[in-house]
Amino acid sequence: MARENASWGYTRIRDAMGNLGHVIGRTTVQDILNEHGIEPAPQRRKRISWKAFLKAHWDVIAACDFFTVEVLTFSGLRRYYVFFVLELRTRRVDIAGIIHQPYGQWMVQVARNLTDAEDGFLKDKRYLILDRDPLYTAEFRKLLRASGVEPLRLPTRSPNLNAYAERFVLSIKSECLNRLVLVSVGQLRTAVRQYVAHYHAERNHQGLGGRLIEPPSNDNTSGAIDCHERLGGLLRFYYRSAA
Image 1 (spheres, one colour):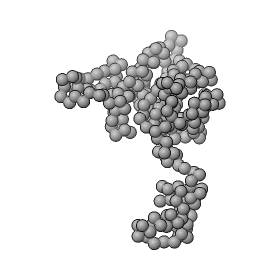
Image 2 (tube, one colour; image 1 turned 180 degrees about the vertical axis):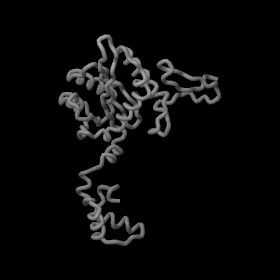
Image 3 (cartoon, rainbow, N blue to C red; image 1 turned 90 degrees about the horizontal axis):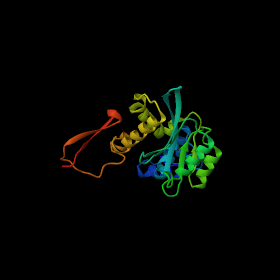
Image 4 (cartoon, rainbow, N blue to C red; image 1 turned 45 degrees about the vertical axis):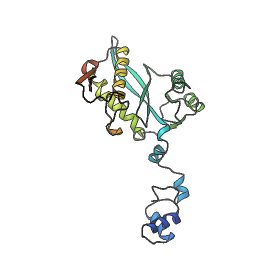
């Protein structure tokens, strides 16, 4: 009870235990919490867990990250950075930019695009999870705050706290990019664009109970079953054609 209810003090826990048929005193509750290393309510309220924070702000929180892709050019392998933002509640993804070498002013422009009042991906968000990469400059974070989005900087070496973004990176690389030999940035952009379209409308997600992020409006259940391909058959999905 104490772990699940940060504001419950000894008396509240004692009374809740009484509702369940366990008659104990406040000092007994205190002793049990001390024995298990659980702090009193005032200290627990100040230390909300990461899981509880995410749950409380689920509708207004997003996460961002970079991943790199090697492109084979005439001058050899060239590394490109893909910057993306993911909405935790829906798992929708926005590819914010692809560039050979990110720099401060480029990141500032990306922040402006993301927080645009008309169609910015973050326009309805209050928090953005990001790591300690120096590319997230003070100016980048300041622009986010000015738009009403609070950047949440994670501790170093804590990828588990940005697990949803990490999972997207695993998906796009294992299902698409690692299976291609990319020979131009144009081909990279096409592959990423095609995968994101597949990810949103054609790929089922275990984290969403096996649903699609953007299910089709057509509820036809009697038409012939057809297979649609992207990237030369690398990505496939099945659908029913119009009856």
